[in-house]
Length: 112
Length: 114
Picture 1 (spheres, rainbow over the protein chains, first blue to last red):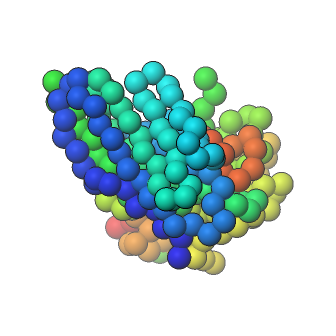
Picture 2 (picture 1 turned 90 degrees about the horizontal axis):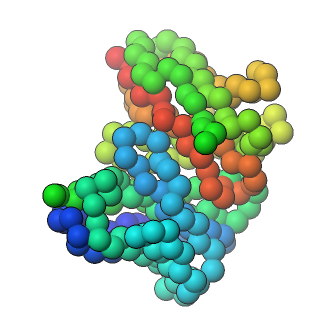
């Protein structure tokens, strides 16, 4: 059975800290891994990764994929209170249906 | 920036009643999806839809569920006879290209079945 596991489930840090969120997966015919940020309702897209070892960056956020060890990490440096959210990892298996398999999410709380 | 819109934001219904959840995907997108999230649980895939037909559906998407694109802009999810366990946040999503790349999600409809 395909599955995506995120760790930790929750994390409390102070502004300015750096955090690393983890995502491991077991998916038949892996094609892509995506990170989303869910603040109140709608998940919003952060990154999509398809190749190992290539870091994606957007401001203070970065992510990298290891297809050999079947995991990805999401780093947030110099955290701000606005980074408080649930971070979702999702994996897209190959095929032509657009189905994503989500992890349970990591709840990040950034305190002032 | 274009966005996926969903209505209503919150729907309360009695068990056994039919509900229709509505979505307007981003206008130039071709692939449409419904996902749901039961409180405290993972976001789960329900169904994908392309070219006016279902591409894939999950085990959750049984005969009580149906989807439709009645016109050029709306995409609906119908639950014929709601059960208590259907209570969840239902997300509509769309993408311009296939296979789940960069799905754009709506804000969701919180369905409460009493």
